[in-house]
Amino acid sequence: MSAIMDVSDQPEGSVSDAGRYALGLTEPGSHVLIREAGRGDLVIGPAGMGKKADLHVTPDAAIHWPAFDPYATPAGSPWPRYIGYHGNDAGFIGWSARRPIEQFSWTPAFGDARRVDAGAARIHTLQLRLDEGGGHLDMTLPPDCALHLFGDLSRLTADGEPPGSLTLAPTLGRRPGMAPYVLPDLGLLQQASSLSLDGGPMGQAISLQGIERFPALTQLMLWGRFADWDALLRLPHLRALEIRFTPDLQGLPPLDSWPLLDRFIAYNVDEAAGKRLRAQMKARGQQRAWTSHASVSQLRKPEWWQREYGRPFSGWSGRQAKAANAAYDAARDALDGATDIEAAQAAITAFAAHFNQMKGIETPERDDIGEAVWQFSQRDSALRLGVTEEQAQRWFDAVRDY
Image 1: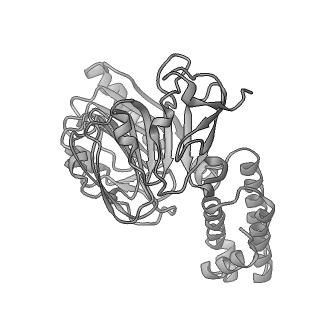
Image 2 (image 1 turned 120 degrees about the vertical axis):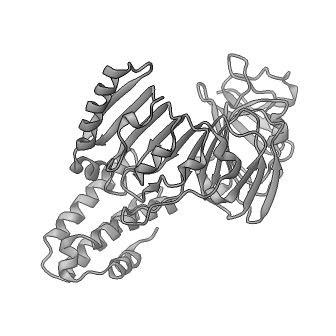
């Protein structure tokens, strides 16, 4: 590994090798940048993020963004290619006006209302993660950008040019019995011609009511659970429709509802609806050939959805996921075999205590474990023994150290 170097001695755009470099991120020599071969991304955030951030800064620290000017990819383009930043310094906007950024993911932490003019920014893909802080962001968008908006969608007001493509991933509840989430009025963003709505297969559904507020839509991508499918009839100009990981397509209009439709994908959808869509796709193709891709694949039975997405650990990976799912199975089996409330308590507390020895249990993981405990409280075996949701939660809190 290379020795620490003083980047001030490097000509602009010359540093593309892996190694350790002195970096004046908040003041001269404040940080050490470790570049790894083949890696094009960099995450900047508070110390509480631990190893999830490559460079630690406090949320309100002033960032000297030109400190990255000397760095390039082996091909000569600006490095990092993808920047993730958790903090409140919006100076990257002005920096990008002279040094383009391929993708910037911003998670602001402020609690007040702030105005940011990115009208001169050169950011190809801008991700705004508005799930922390609670403040409101009023932004002039970068021109010709792809905008991905995560979290509380109502916390953004936008002006300037509408995004070339728009992805919306609102914060949703984890339980399917909740009323469907209704999109807020998004003003300028509703002029987008390409929209992706992202949710989860087994949690709260996203309502498609109000989709007519996107009159320019020609491309619509849907991922997860949705409601009010008939609202799609209000998009007569739709040319592309993609539906993925959707367990319930009850109410989806027939494909001939959109006379301009040239591209259709249904992937990982419920079996019964998938068979109907295949027949509709074939019939449409006999009347007018599909000029782009059209397919219906990976039809799934109800038990598949429950197995793959019904438990809270689908986002975990590696050994942690394997251990969590094994503990879940053991607790479920013990609970289903319990003959009194004491045995039910033992099953749930053993499950909660299992994670006390597991590393990396932070707020998201703790919430996943707590959700599993809630699921246990809703099982027929638990209800039969008189276990309540509040009781299961108390057992959970009493034994956990995370």
